[in-house]
Length: 305
Image (cartoon, rainbow, N blue to C red):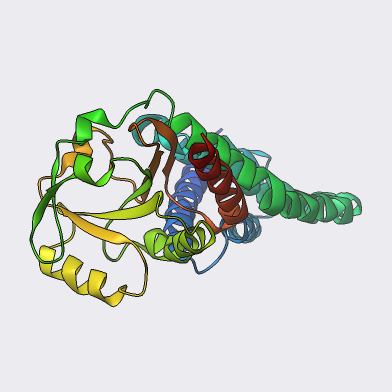
């Protein structure tokens, strides 16, 4: 009886340890995925793939002789619990972070289970996983990101609340945003200096401006005064003199009154009357071609009407 109790306690203790280990792995890989992707080092799908490999390796390392099935369920539970924290502090990451990214964790756990117990199905599972990763990179992830971007922009119709907001040029001259919008189609980009996706997006903005070369279209970049000091903004703007953009500084954080949130870059496209035709948050290399085609269509439609 005593040995049986010790066995139960051992299994319970081992289950708690495995759960803690898997939870830590999930939390670390989720945050590393976001951090590395934000610097543009690897595509998002490649990082999800690495996440699945980490889970695969973790399960193998945790495998013990005569360990029952609870081992795998502990990893499954932790992958769900950690990713489901988006319901508390990151609803904007649904459905990309959860449930989509969670599928990669589950694939890693499942393949590790087959490797240990049922190797005859291992090759088929690996081929299925690689196919899923390929489709994710070229189809699923771009489609999900585009869906999330469109969802963010719903309900925003006019720029009028911001037009009386005061901005500043690189030489500290004050100007009202509304004065820059009269009679033009405008792409307004909110950014801050040192923002990796903002920097990656810059060359696409330059391409749009070069391809739609008309005085009726303009690109305005507005730097967050809440994040970037004015001297840093000025130095950075002067470095981009070759870009035919207008650079302004949002010293009084007028963005918050219209587009609350800390995500950058923020982009809106407005027509000559200040009506918002497009609203996008963030920038992803995976959707760059979609971004260009949609913006070309939106801007040309405004200019033709």
